[in-house]
Image (cartoon, rainbow, N blue to C red; front, side, top):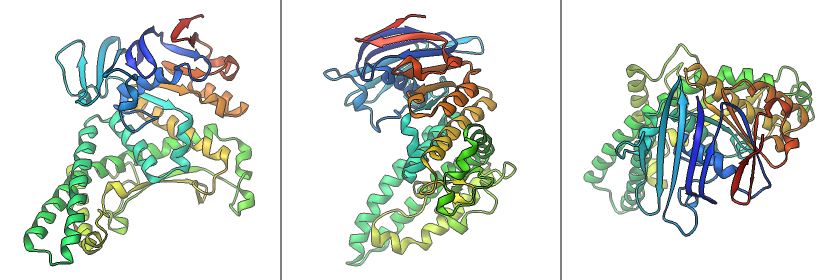
Length: 403
């Protein structure tokens, strides 16, 4: 899979842009603030319907305008697909495929798959659980687009149930009536059903991703990194990387889910087991939820545990180890999607400036053979020779192909 053409209208700093790409490596070079990241952000948006830089769509629309348009021609298995997304201020976004009738934006998911490395990736290791949940859900949607709807449905139910808990908690002090309890029970059922679907997808994803993370970390981590944390009392020998899913169900999580590739949570029986477990746990903590006015059980309370050796990465990993682990998560995502049969476009957004010489060379070596790699950099010297490819200069509101 590769992007053949990108067209932008009023997206971020770009009033208008037409840019043709080739398969293989392409490097976009320009000073900071010239709009390099805006270009690859647009591709990431088509892939995930979200930005790796901001949580909402409003900043993506050029100031003083009411809508932004992104058009991408994607080539996969010899066929070309034209995807168009209109990002609107104050109204629903729209999408088109091959200039057909307007459709829901999430209907275009899967047309373009990307794996984007960026300086912001360090939050996956050092940030909050929400950062890691977002990583999982974005990858889950890239792998299986239907989960975009599952995630939306779960977030809608969670919001409505949480609002009910707040009002019910206040009413409880004056005597909660049976109608209030019945209403809460209905929302418990909705949360458990949609939550089980999302949880099942995440569990299976982590089970499939874990071996790729271990292999990728071994490929990018420097041999000397094992000694980086020796002074913290961590055994420096054999520091391999591992990931596992931590559910708010705790010990109530059905045994085996998410632990091996042979035990699948996503089949009908698995989802029903998870739904039953969620319902039981919601009933158990109901008093606490009413007291606090928040939903305490469900995928929104879960986390991805990242471990190096026998210690959690967060709080124990050195800066170098944290970078290696963040890179390993992205490389693992690339290998997982490729194994599924659709090699994604690799995007390296100003990453090489953050890496030491050894990691630069190793990362370039690992990704140079990808069908398409798009690199942004402030200076040519940051980009290893293996990724020289086609070169573009970005500046003054223009992109010029120079080599």
